[in-house]
Amino acid sequence: MTEKIDEVDRRILAELQRDCTLTIDELSERTNLSRNACWRRVKLLEDRGVVTGRIALVDPEKLGLGLSVFIMVRTTNHDPDWLKRFRAAATAMPEITGVYRMSGDLDYVLRARVADVKAYDRLYQRLIARIPLSDVSASFVMEEIKETTVVPVEVR
Picture 1 (cartoon, rainbow, N blue to C red):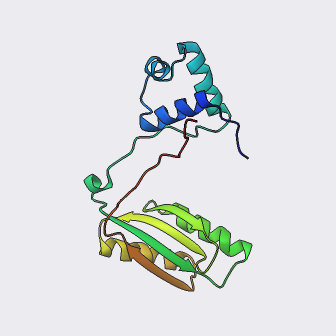
Picture 2: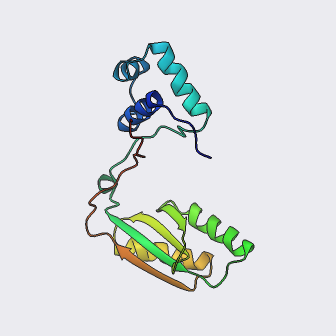
């Protein structure tokens, strides 16, 4: 469901997406609100589920996870039990950072972060041991041109 987000909330969201460590005083200054009004708006955005969490972004290269992989999955099985098992398998693997059910030729696309091709192969072997898949292929990212967690909140 789409939330009604006014211009002030959009400014708050834009600032929080840039830096969620801002104090309420800093955020209120950047958004031209009083401290109390700013705090109330942030709290309301959290209560309404617009702000779903605050996280630290980590450089995967510095953790030895320099290879980003997109895994394309096709299956001939679309029953609810299979989907439940697939979800459980994919979400249990910390290397898999995104799972998407697709329209078109692919059934699912998974995004993963691993150290290298050997680590990807170990992930692949664990995945196919947990759930039967008809066709799996992977594409390795050669260059990350843009990677962001920022959702566009254009201040109008």
